[in-house]
Length: 287
Image (cartoon, rainbow, N blue to C red; front, top):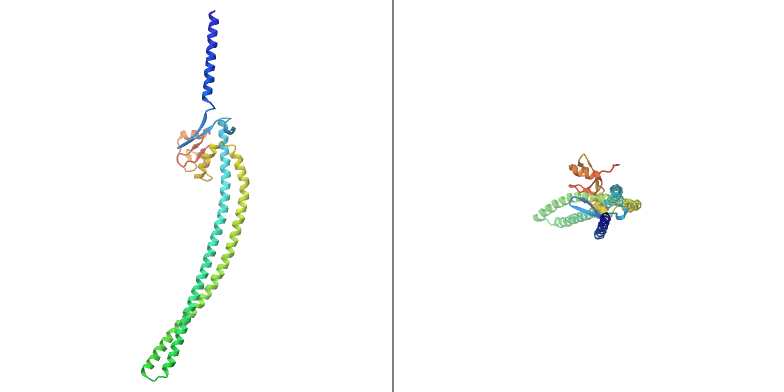
């Protein structure tokens, strides 16, 4: 009888343990979260999210590999944007040069008009003095003789100024022609650069379409929180969010990294960011 009684006690304890286990499972709810931590912040990725973490550490390493692909795509997109921006910048500079050439042409025209006006004033004054000399020459008074001599001296000075003014006008006429030609040349250059910029923008837009599709496809294989972390680092270091740790140094900022940090990076089981530049550290096999 005693052995049978002991067996019943064992069975009863087993049932109690199962009940406790089931109750704990109900209280615990879904699988625990996987924490992907780095200095200053952390990201909680639900285990099994998007089917990426079901395989454990190996699939997390695959996510890191996918981040390298994303970074390569970002670098290509960045290069295309820089190409379009460069063409647009050159077009703006060409427009600025054209605008300056037009302004210079307008200034040359104003200078010529002012010089011609000055020349006309000199010629008018010479004519007025010559007329006055003719009037005084009919008067035999000594004062009239002195006045004639004075007026003739003034006429000589004005004639000298007049000749200099004529030379200035001629030089300004040449400068005006040159400035107009320069403005026309800059206008053609600006139009050419605008055409190039438009073609570059069209080329870049078409080239970015497949890159964007691939980016979307690869991004779908990465847990959203991990991708958000990458995008944060990429905003700080465009196209250079990921880097290796080489000989205990960050490949990005060249700061020294402690050995514990290096070991965690090589494990490829979590997101590790540089404590100095905040880039994401990784130790990919193929890099």
